[in-house]
Image (tube, rainbow, N blue to C red):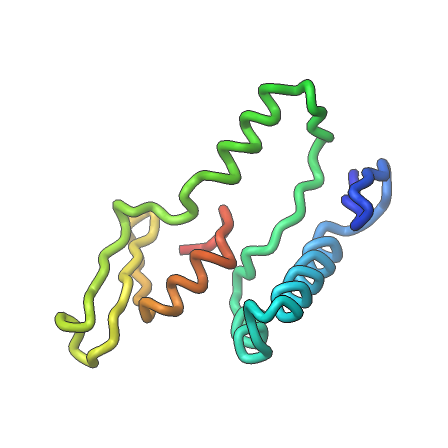
Length: 135
């Protein structure tokens, strides 16, 4: 297993549980965003209450600079859309029954739908984009 240090170095065979890495990564990212004034305690508390936090740590094999295939795969992963636009429905304020813009997102298997306030969805899609978003 590889553990990514803040000093941008890799240490191999460190016996660390993935959940511990994710919690440490989550803590550091939220602390950094708060320090930069991007989020506040209310947003942090909200994000920490989510079932799927969106925080993940890559613990696979090292990707070397000369590994063009690996770097290409990583680049495609980073720029991919985290939500499928085909499964999103935007409901503008004018069409909403309560006067709040919304996004309705349908699950991949089409069996469930979640309704988000538009601003909440924007926050979620910008900060917590992950494969395991669970919706």
